Image (cartoon, rainbow, N blue to C red):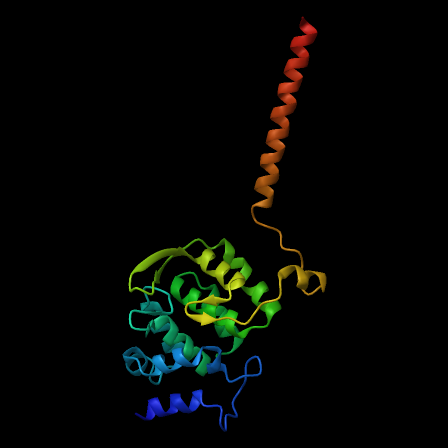
Length: 221
């Protein structure tokens, strides 16, 4: 009961004096209805009590899917651990360690979601865009209680382009081009650009070869 009371105090702005993110109580980066369901859930009460940055990793390692709420608005462990992260506010270097380790893909996904919620717009792009080349498979819990297959790069693309992910409204990101025009971001070079240029060169060579062949045939006549 004390744990539940502490959680409710965390969610209450009255008298809140802790660290803020984007000028707000970090817990409020999740919507109130979702927060209430989380702290009333069995997973929050049984698995999120008294954990820290290290033991949270153990919970994340055990995750087998991402998602928001499902069924009768039941929150996923993914959302519960996100609220716990917002309560803990781990140092940046720990978040990046979660993100860049390669062994546990759901821990990476959790860290990516946390980055999207808490980092500045420029840092969101800089930190998450490298994951657009990460093609590990994830399972996503759907609202009807089923599962869907997604990929980590697809999940990250959703974080960068959509306004709502995993049952959570996301703070609007400025368009990447706007930040480039302000010299806050360098132009992003697609990892496919070299491959596409190679295909273009190959096509050009084939066309030139065909043309030369016709010319030679014409000359020989």
